[in-house]
Image 1: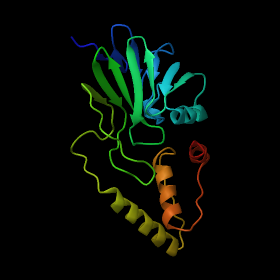
Image 2: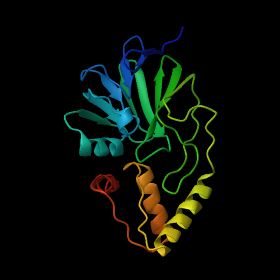
Image 3: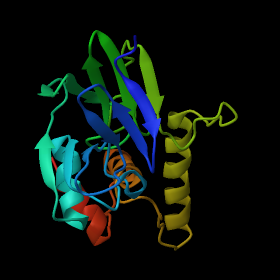
Length: 208
């Protein structure tokens, strides 16, 4: 008999005989929530007690307050009731994690957005053996086929150089967490030009 079930009730819930864990969602501030990463579409309005990586919690505190936090670094494990919870990188953004939930000899892996390819700032996620896999991702459909990252990097550098030579200032409108760090790393590695960033990106960039 399965010990771990997945429910949908104003969000995703992992439930065992003794424990209820909400996945990037919460019905109320009393719920225990696993936060996969700090992008706003994965942060519930009702934040009470959360489990996340230290990096995710630090970024959350820049924009939100009033929640209790339990830190879980990659490879660490904690126990709640009849479940064991551990984390591994999801390769998406700083601090993003896959949650490994073990109970009664069964294993479920939950991840928000997932990236399995190395980027200029992060290593890609590694596969984890599991009985059940839950992914809440933006581009999950096989119809989405993107160019190789190296091709995009090259086009960005070419566009920056071309824009500067034309007398214009290149500017990017991107997420403060994730793509902003990637572009800044790209510029720092291949171009000797100053970068000006918004306050939200600068604050996220200070997290180590």
